[in-house]
Amino acid sequence: MNLTPPPGFMTAREQPPEQRSEIQQHPK
Image 1: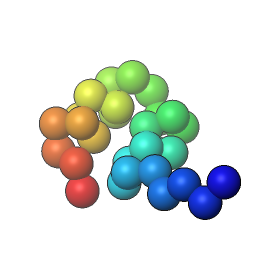
Image 2: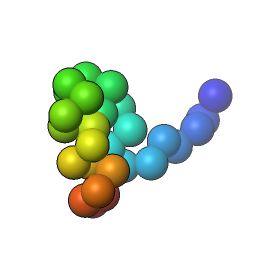
Image 3: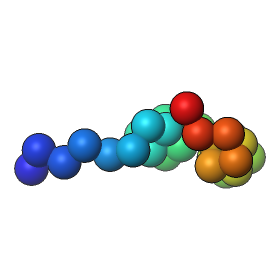
């Protein structure tokens, strides 16, 4: 599996839902 998840994907999983919302609003 050489899938390349979008930036912030793995980060969002590690961080709480509140951080996930910010990542989706301000993707890097």
